[in-house]
Length: 198
Image (cartoon, rainbow, N blue to C red; front, side):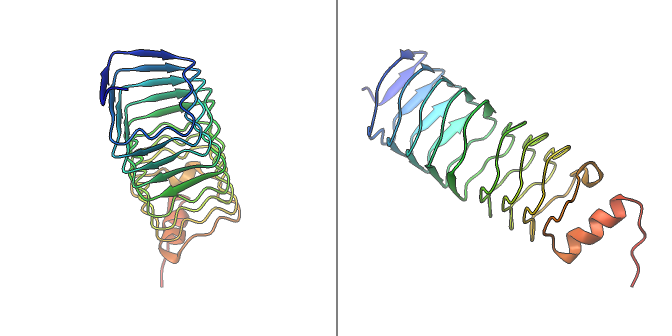
C-alpha cells in the first residue's frame, strides 16, 4: 500500500496483523474493513470515516485520528499509546476493554458510550462530549476534563482525584459513590448551593 492515500474508498479489506507504520490517510472511507491485531506508529488518519471496522487487538502508538468518524466498529482489547484523537466521533462503537496510555482525546464525541472501568488517567479530554455515557468505575485521575460535557453520565464509583473539571456543569452530574479529592468535593458542594467555610 502507498505511504499516502487521499480520497480513497476501501471496502471489506482484511489487514489482519498489518503494520501501517507512519502511513497517512486523508478523507478516506473504510467500510467493513479488518484491522485486527494491526499496528500503527506515527500514522495519521485525517477526516476518515470507518463503518463496521474491526480494530480488535490493534496497537496504536503516537498515531493521530483527526476529525474521524467511527460507526458500528469494535476496539476490543485495542491499545492507544500517546495518540491524538482530536475531534473524532464514536457512534455505536465497542470500546471495552481498551488500554489508553496518555494522549489527547480533546473535542472527542463519546455521547452515550459504554466506558465502564476504562482508565483515562492523565488523558486530555478537554471539551470532550461524554453526555449520557456510562463512566461507572472508570478512572480519570489527573485527566484534563476542562469544559467537557458530562451531563446525565453514570459516574458511580468512578475516580476523579486530581482531575481538572474547570468549566464542567457539576450540578448536572449524579455523584453516586464517586471518588473525588477535597478540592473537587468543595466545588461539587458549591455547585449545589452550599457555602463552604472553615
